[in-house]
Length: 257
Ligand SMILES: C[S@@+](CC[C@H](N)C(=O)[O-])C[C@H]1O[C@@H](n2cnc3c(N)ncnc32)[C@H](O)[C@@H]1O
Image (cartoon, rainbow, N blue to C red; front, side, top):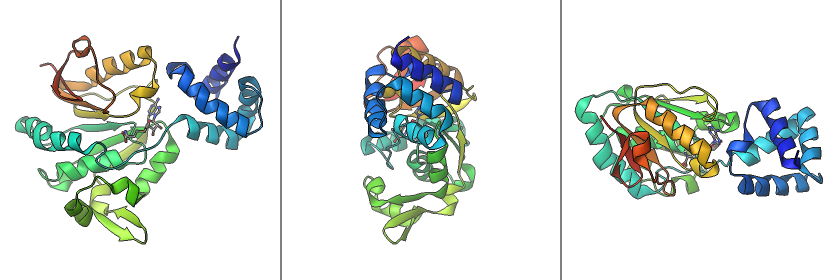
């Protein structure tokens, strides 16, 4: 068995996370630099040490989950969401069921609430937001950000939904209340159903083709007919028909009726 396979087995046993579903070359590169920094010589020794050292495990989890995010990431796509996708979805119903999958530190679900507030009172907005990494979810719940995370946010939105605290920006309570955060592994756990909108951005790039295929299949099942999947700006789906999707706009896919 290869060195890396030993790590895969050890991590699966310890955390339930299946590293074999993440692109191997990329993951190996990230983890090799980490274990070398910690003084290990190979994946096998590193894997053994992780089994009994919580700090090492936390550091490993932090390195394997790439948590970069920002509000209104790829701002032009958020304009399409606001001007085209939300109006279409709201034609039929006024209470949308929305999921921000792999939400990291919360910028994405909070952006969704801010955009949707142009159409609905905040009390009618509820967004479900999940991530594998409990650490980022705890930060998301606090809702405190630096100005880099806000660089795409329109000024009126900053004035309305953030409170400046020193060099940081705090998301206001009314927006925070619209989002429910929960830990979930997209590769293992069951998905809720009947969604009008699923936003899953900048995580599929880390998965193998096999894992992506399974996740798109699951997203399709989780959406209502007519529901929309919003993906990241390098994550075009090349065979949307396979999942019963049609393209509505670049990086937006609608489940066929
Ligand atoms: C680069 S961030 C993307 C954040 C946000 N969606 C965005 O586009 O700005 C990727 C996130 O995917 C999460 N992630 C990685 N593997 C996952 C899995 N199997 N299930 C759920 N989330 C996962 C990581 O913890 C990380 O927070």
